[in-house]
Image (tube, rainbow, N blue to C red; front, side, top):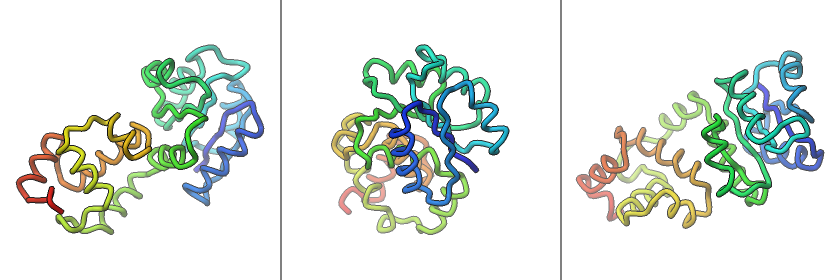
Length: 201
């Protein structure tokens, strides 16, 4: 599978390529300068596992790049990388079909965490679950943190700020925790933890 980095700035393409390789070293990464070259490049190099899209390209306006990729490749995760602020554009990008909004000013650790969540396949998740037996002493350190923060009544935004990660990554952590516990919501997870005496571990 292939990751396509769509950005008109060579230095940013190189930086994102390096960070993606830190998540999955064996991935094939193809740089693309403009949106108009995406379809022909995908036909030549094979199906995409992830699109990394710069919001401001020479041949896009507003959300047009997000909308185009979502229409033509609806099953491929899409990460928007931009120098624009989240408060101004994040909701618009997610509503247009993006799976993640990542500011270029974020730390490398934050960007890697967001990329890891997008590149995690079902097989990866299944292997991760199989490798970690369930039980109150078998939760990861991060999962124990999430339970304690739930008990404190913290929102996803509060948790993201405390852990120095994005809200999207917080949602991914909760998704994994819910799978581990066999629950479907924060309320059910908190009830499960209280019932089993996990909040003291």
